[in-house]
Amino acid sequence: MSINKISIIGHRGARSYAPENVIPGYEVALECGVDSIDVDVVTTSDKVLLAYHDLHINSDILSSTNTSKVIDNTILVKDLTLTELKNSYTVELNPNSNYSKWFPEQKQFPNTRLNSLQEIVDFINLKTNNTIQIQIEIKNSFLHPEWSEIPSELALLVYEFIKKNDLINRIKVQAFDWRILVALNQFNPNIKTAYLFAYDTKDNYQKLFANSKVMDIANKMPKSELAFLPNLVKALGGYSYEPEDNELRYEDVVKVKKLGLKIFVWTWPEHSGFVYNPELIKKLISWGIDGVITDNPNELRELLKNKF
Image (cartoon, rainbow, N blue to C red; front, side, top):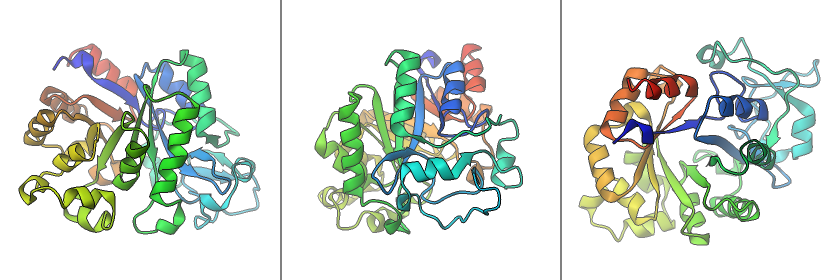
């Protein structure tokens, strides 16, 4: 594969350079020349899709607008309206947090407020004349399902948003919870669904997706096929297989390509120990991946420009 075909996806904007999931970060990402922007999505109490990674208020990246108030990390986003969230918090990296150590060069933008997904998409459309690709990741929790809407409701909210904004041909939707993706493709099979893989998916998928359409399909497949889970992703109508970068193996790339699925990789610093590993990225590109979801789009762009 020509390295010119590698897609650069700005993770949460450009997290190494600017705050995540907010308009200033996406402006930086566009300046870096990304091919696609990545947005995390959760829901508020008034059913607004919020551009935010966590299901709770996270003191690593938020500050209270009330300087005398300490942030309570047990406050759930789904219990607050969009207006309450905007009025109560500003977005800035907590320099004393362990999380901040991964992003020492992240520039701060004072008084930045949280944004709805609609605000992000409107900004991106204005800046790019409705041309750039958009990737959203729907966030929920297997351990705490009560912290968010149920999978079918999340799928419906996102589907309605996609229709309203005429994004069918410009959007890719990710989730670790495959039930959401299956429900989304039941609304429209043309929506590109991206199946995220964490290190424990292979051993736990039967437990994670019990009593759902995912397992209905899986139970109809030969056990030999299920030994390689991308076979299930293909059967579910998935567009892409999306594992953590340092867990991808060459033999998996070969098998996935034969299935006709795309492969995009992402980095989990707290798990892998790095934010951007150019040597690993070079290797994965040589194997034939289709794109990289990166916190460091500038570095990746330069690597591709110089053809290693």
